[in-house]
Length: 187
Image (spheres, rainbow, N blue to C red):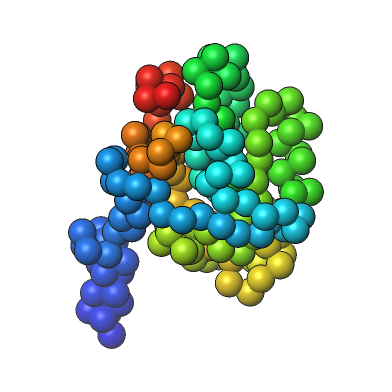
């Protein structure tokens, strides 16, 4: 029995094999896959409606409650003028409903568009959504109004008006985020 428990414990500590790790849904140089969905407020979104023909920065984040996400999003605020000068648009997307996203706006005077992806519809379609467990699962089940809450792998993408991906940062470790100053070089 002791050896079975040790084997099970060792299995839990073993890193995921390369083929089990989440992979980015596309690469630099790819044409962005179609993205159309209806958010929690009932608004329809697509690449065209979000970009308005400009370069688009998409930031998928876990939620306003995540300190790493909040810190990363706050770093973008000082770059609002630069992003506008480069004729680009930044859109942050999370599975939170608009009422939860409002907390971020109220707390930070967020100057960019926040889009809700309820039940991670877009994140699931792109394969960047992951199930959660434990206490976080319980909380998110309530927040997302679902029995199977999921969170996106944090991802930052720069897409040109031609829908070609210029920059991509995708890291399953939610603590790792790119420096926004490096990202704006791709606008």
